[in-house]
Image (cartoon, rainbow, N blue to C red):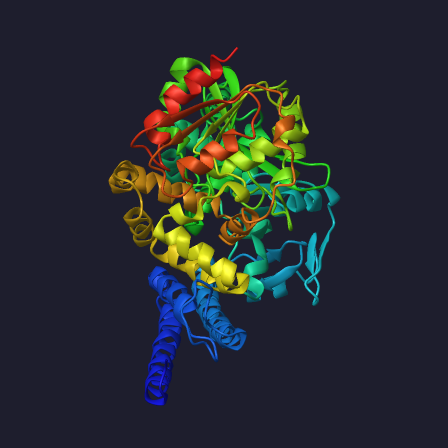
Length: 574
């Protein structure tokens, strides 16, 4: 029985706990790297907060709906505050010093080719001419093909690389830099491409020294290429260099071979683009090529390729967050075994267009479109972790999409989750989601910024609840940096896709997995602290004729330990 004095003391303690929790929320907005501590605090609060009139213990949450609404109100204010600072940081990072310092008109384009902002010189120079900027942010192009080329770049149909496109008849060139999408609110979140308009005297010709250092060409070749960039005529360039036209053609042919160019126009465009990027000190972080195709609904679907380009094609899907595995780690082995690994980038990651309200069962048509584009007939699919649900749903709905399916440490349908065996971090995620999805989304938005600002701290927090073999992966400096690099590359359109995918995993798949007719191989670690071995066996029970194998001592990150063996056995299936 609770006496009045005890009840009053409990109320005081609750108020003090509330103050501490609210303070923690706003501290995390300022220092998002500490978001996991906030997650722990809120999860504990939702478990222990007494409801009005509550007089006994219960396994049910003990806070009133009003308490939760007040907490959500504080979280919303903290998220808005964090988002404001986030926007300022991203704006500074995106624009850097080049915004007002560049001598060329610079335009910031949104998804619909609308000019969100521009530098002062753009208003002056683009009042008339082949590219005109109107007061409402609309652009008018004299050359329709130039506009279409820019539109393709702006919707990432040409990838994420910096590109130089030109209209020779109008005497104008556009240097286009697709930028990583921000998760902050406001115009910075709408920004897709930064464009410099280069025309007439505005085009700065790269020096022979710069060209030589950039492309490792000879001194004579760099001098010729410099003049070709400046005046565009081979005969005049040869005359100015006091060499014969035959010698100039020989040098041109040699330079084209070194720069992998098929024409003089392509050579000059390539040289100018790289030189201007160098002069502007634009970030060049993309090393592996991200291929892309335009789908019938105008979305972009992208993929990476590893190993032997002429080898046996194998499709693969990576984990939730799109950070594991780093296939470049296995590239030499892929080549040795004659494998052409094709890693499909899911919508919202990389440059694959985000798709609102997507479910696992919606990805099959995209996979089929990629297979048709690449001329692949029923290739094998090897899916890891969060890629498993997409591959399973595609296999159930489209029986001829793969000739075999391999699942490594796959996520399982929600009905098979053993919730009492989740690691501490994911247990807290799920408790928040089940108490009120708004709590999960708001803490997740703070968490996204925390992961971006302090990824090492995030992975250290994850490691605490994992098995020893998983901890060893995250303790390995090389594998950790590969994971962080892959994660940052995959979040080119912003990191909120991670929240979407987590929420997606709480939904029923609404697909009959018993319809799968192709051979299926499923491997899982017995010490997986996120998707338990019991959960994995539950999934295996849904799959006709599955070849299931478990591994003692291995967990969620078993991919680096068994991937070669896994692929070898998958590809040997009859």
